[in-house]
Length: 341
Ligand SMILES: [Zn+2]
Ligand SMILES: [Zn+2]
Image (cartoon, rainbow, N blue to C red; front, top):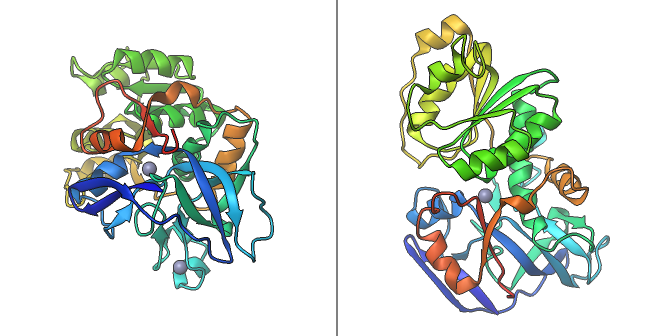
């Protein structure tokens, strides 16, 4: 089979590889679609730890082609999404129920071979069934949606809350929808791209803002602004120093800034604790998808969360090298790799 390998940091190539042989508790999955995520670009640049050589791709879904001898609940022909994050179940964090902080966490597409390949081996406990009637591309959004669900859960968005979302990529677009589902009355999306602002409004944002002219905090928080006084929760979904620094300033007193964007390892930001203290603004973080992947699959299978408008383009494995090794072009939300054409 063909697979896209991160050979070393900064070096991607597509080569022939052995089709994985599923272990007794694993499924062999023929990949239908696998999303290219900002994390893949960080992995390529060495800004996120990994174990090359490895096949990248952690946002995948596909059809089961074969099952190991001990697999109980899946059969060939079923469609599945894979939760890429494998916890050990025996470390102190796992025993506390914080599996996302597992001391022995391994991830498919980071530490073991992932979905930028024609086939992937998926442990049965990481698989969640999707309907065969679903659009074959949609399953690739379960993983990013599961990560957003964890963030929205932790940020405690409640009916009537006000929310500001910074960043119009896939995470921002999913958080806008989840915030509305959670009952937020006002959801503002901040992004430079006019196309993304228009899309966000069609997905439930009650207002959008172009940050280009500057004065973002005043234009949102001032008495005459979009959200006078600020938001109960600000989601930073851009992964940029400036917007991480801006996020707590966009929160209302007693509010929170949730950092969902991934900054390069080593990147520092400036905050002013005095200012945070006097407004009791909390800075929160959310890591991956503990026990949220099935909910994400339900939301996508039921059509409750719209993912079709988030697909900017589809590419083959060879073309994917170019896409991963360059920043996403302006206006692009998500590129999907279709390793089997
Ligand atoms: Zn990702
Ligand atoms: Zn563990």
